[in-house]
Amino acid sequence: MIDIKLIRESPEIVKKSQKNRGMSVEEVDKVAKLDKEWRALKEEVDHLRAKRNKISQEINEAKKTGKNTEHMIKEAREIPEKLEQKEKKMTELKEQRDILLKEIPNIVDKSVPVGDASRNKVVKEYGKIIKPKFKLKDHADILEALNLLDTKKAAEVAGARFYYLKGDLVKLNQAIIQYALDFLKHKGFTLIHPPFMLRKEVLAGAIPMAAFEEMIYKIEGEDLYLIGTAEHAINAYHSNETLNPNQLPLRYAGISPCFRKEAGSHGKDTKGIFRIHQFEKIEQFIFCKPEDAWKEFDLILSNTIELFKGLEIPFRTVCLSSGDMGRVPTKTIDVEGYFPSQKEYRELASCSNCTDYQARRSNIKYQKGNQSEYAATLNNTAIATERMIVCLIDNFQQADGSIKIPKALWPYTGFKEIQAKNDKKN
Image 1: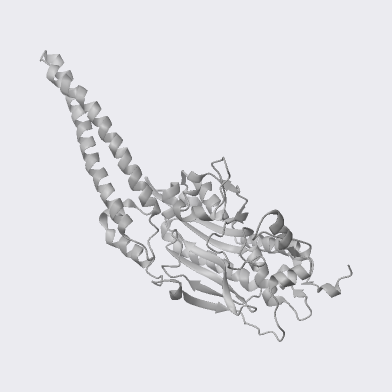
Image 2: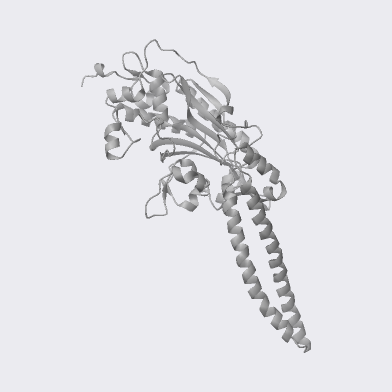
């Protein structure tokens, strides 16, 4: 969440950010009002506490000199009841204030284009778009014809947007995972395999739950949710900790399945494995000092660019507009792969600088001299494997029905292509 001091001292900054996101400023005013009431009450409580201490001292001194202390004792007895009432009200006000404060998004960075998705800005394009001389097929049609994908049976046993991967497609999926993990390990990232479920309180340390709850699955009868990304679980790994500044930045590469309801996406990408309820993703996550955040942002973005170059797909980087960005980041750059069959770019990865927004929510600090300050967190998809499979098939399908495999994956797959059905012996 944002620092309450920002609303106290510079509410216009918060309101401008809200307007840039296309959101109401009403919540900012509500937080400011509750905070003002809380601070006024705190002054009264501090005054009563000081008065209680002063009277106690005066009573002790009066007793020593034999003075009458009855009126002072009576006044002293009234203070605890007043304190209890005011402290209870203070607690209520703070809870109300913080609930609203946690729902206010991060401050939009000045470099972010203002407006809706139409204002997204292409930063750079990579690779060469090849125009095939044959009619491209949809990835689902190709894979199901090769008996490598079964969405019909998956829909029967689990529902829509689930799948069975089979044969060489399983090896390709694992090859992409291992390719990304080996790359990031070589870059000095610590590999991490997080819990696949988190408690609500822990999840709320990474995201505003009101905005995200409709996207994630809750375990019935348990205070547990299936993770939508390894980002949230890695963020929780250092919750309520004060980090050693000499060990920063901490760089993690998380591998996990991700579970999403895909609420609001009815009718979109219903075929195949592009938009699904369950997928694998390798996530980069950084804890660092705030002054190093943009340097780390460039690092994790360059890692994804290098990984994608190795897979030989055309892609581009896009700076998301203020209205198209998530609530947690101050800035997001998406990496979009080109899909020749659709003649358009589609999101494959997302790189975000979250400043100290998650660290405040999760109480993650680092020691700075004699004080402790909130750390900064950043995240970026290295590779979401099922979407990458779709992109690879779209770009590397051949006229005979076979699928070429990028050279970088050969050591992991053990094969250079997925052969067409008529080339198979069985």
